[in-house]
Length: 216
Length: 248
Image: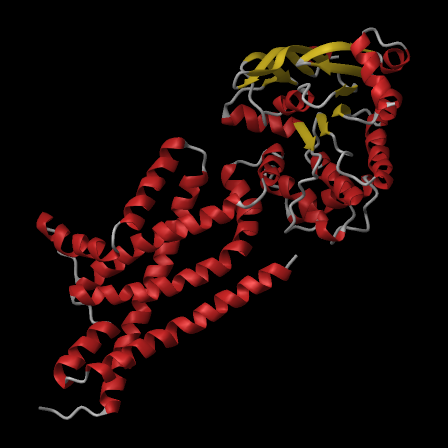
């Protein structure tokens, strides 16, 4: 059996961590884009659209992310659509992320006083114009901190992609453990890498929250 | 005169509205001619603010009809947009956009709704803010202005769309007493310049001196209306007499 030094283990984990970062970024950015579309539907005042988003949110928030991954990876295959682990993970995380972000952002939109809607509609702005020029610029200030905070959940959520065979840092850890039988070392390092990714974001979210309180 | 000008600018016919079991507007009819300054007074809960808000579609109504300069007030998106280009509104709580400067507040609707270019926006903002005596506050954010100044920016913002009629919903009620006059002076100037105004107000002296027509609302109805000076001097109903007496 090959002799795995600490550095070999650590460097391999770091290489795999690139995929964790990439998957997180993709999930967060595309989840954010889907989230914005859902936000417009949710706050449009059109009942059918709002209901669609409510159900969407309930489904994705009310079921485990792991089941969503399984359904996309194994379930969809039954219909003859082969999704690579990569595509299934990216898609599942995107949908899951959007369901949380739309709810966070809806809260921020609703915290903008009603008078802002009334004043802007009195000036003949339509719904999209109101959102674009009046509501979102104000909601955004409130949204930044909880949104950055939620990105931590996305990063940790990518660990589940290991179960459908996507080699990110958790999967790499499992493989290295199988080869070295040093679970404590390997998984400590994996945890440390997650912490190194998440901790700065948590701190940033806290800092942004504090700044908001003294802002205009 | 074209036929449109001989018709009243704002025609309100038999408006009814209920909030649940409570009927707040019980068949209101009112005509407002070009250049009129209509002061609507009455106790809180008499339906005066609700009435005002139906005129630009912020509040729906159950039956009756309203039209402004030939545009009917309906729920339709297109009519609503056309209507709101003709009707300006100023609110009790100012409702300025806090993330925009005074100039940007004024220029937003011309930019977004009328597609005005940068130069035109700047000119409109300066012209309108000068009109309300705030030509030196273009770059200030609402939070850097006093209540009276904020309300004057709100008036300038409404004027920037060149409305045919301006609705004022208790626009001095949220102001400290010493700031009320600077806002009323601006409104008085507008009235003298021929702007059509409909005001819900508690400023009785202002209603008497500047108003061309007084409407006293009571329990969701127009209880009494007419010339302000005459009505204040000699109320035709005990309710108005009591209301005027209680306000002082």
